[in-house]
Amino acid sequence: MNANRMFHRPWLIPLVLLAWGCSDPSAVEGDPATPAPLAATSRPPSGGLVSCGKLPYDSVSQEIGPAGGVIAVGPHFLWIDSLALPSPVTITAVAPSDRVRRIRLMPDGLVFQKTAFLVTSYANCNVKQATTPRIAQVSDDLTILGYLSSATGTDTVFAKVWEGTLYVGGEVHHFSNYAIAW
Image: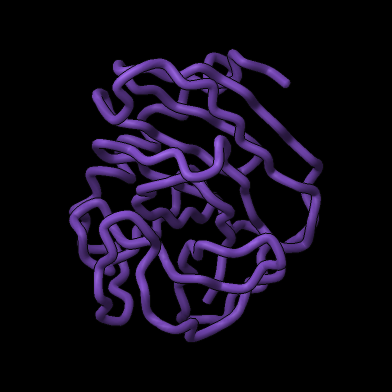
């Protein structure tokens, strides 16, 4: 585990900040949804998990406090806004080696007082043409529980190409398991 991972990727911070503040017209709108204040969007699943090329296992633990911060693990980036946490918390992010592009964020159930935003690459994933994947909250057995919404509270998902790599993002209100889905 590397607690200083963000210092190895200097381009990381502009990417995550761009994703969080995206008002770009190239953002893709999804289906209307009922927002849930502390969970992923609470509509029934409309698709399944996306199959991707297998990546190596990666895990990072990093302390994030009231100043906020960024954690990078595998193809995933978690940006936590300042004052989202009232006191320092050691956060562990695990990206399993799997055909499903997923991340587990711990400690389980950690709730933010302000924005946290998860951005992940879907490069080398089997995504249907003219379809933008979303980030789904999933159970331990990979059942889709709901979908992340945007930082504006709508169901507009961030989908962008950054330096030749495809990314999708959504606002995280609490820690759980997340994966790329239709």
